[in-house]
Length: 248
Image (tube, rainbow, N blue to C red; front, side, top):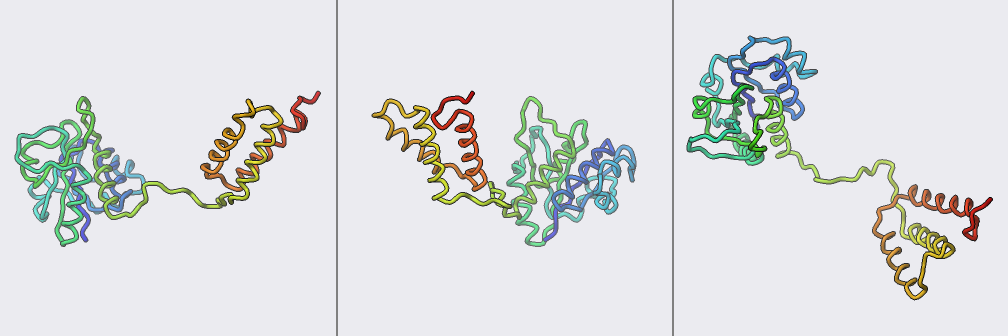
């Protein structure tokens, strides 16, 4: 599988090129091409901003125009936030990178065009692409920084291959309390609440206790947390006295 090539078209600031390189390497992408950079190439500001991703810049290809930069690509995406009067598929980043992976799996070369910071890609650039990628941003402020746009596309590319659960719990050094520990804690709370006169009126006490037991069973408490609760209750009892009266 060939990773997509990120093609920066007429970038204006070296810092943004460096930020793009850093974003690429965050997600394992290393194929960069630069078309007609305003401040020349190589660019020391790009190297400084890349912050450890210098190898992406070292291997970046320099091109005079977009046709030359995409000449060996089998499929090209153009990223743009503006509406275009061009008949082309318009995809979200998620859909585009899903399609890019399918193409790459077939040995196809995929290029992604990113426009200059001031105004983005020109229509003359976009017409050379096979499809448009548009990020669903705020229509009143659609402009994305070059590095941010590259980051979005890199993230979606990596997400397509990574099987990452949408939610996980850090189980490191975590020991969840067993049922008997939760039961003991519930009894301890009931005892203290009985002394404090919480279960009133008496007719409602059974229902109140059931509600509390239900609450304890829902909480994913660790053994350490159960011990902390016991300690809190003992300290409260010590300060107030076993009968609930504050010590003097």
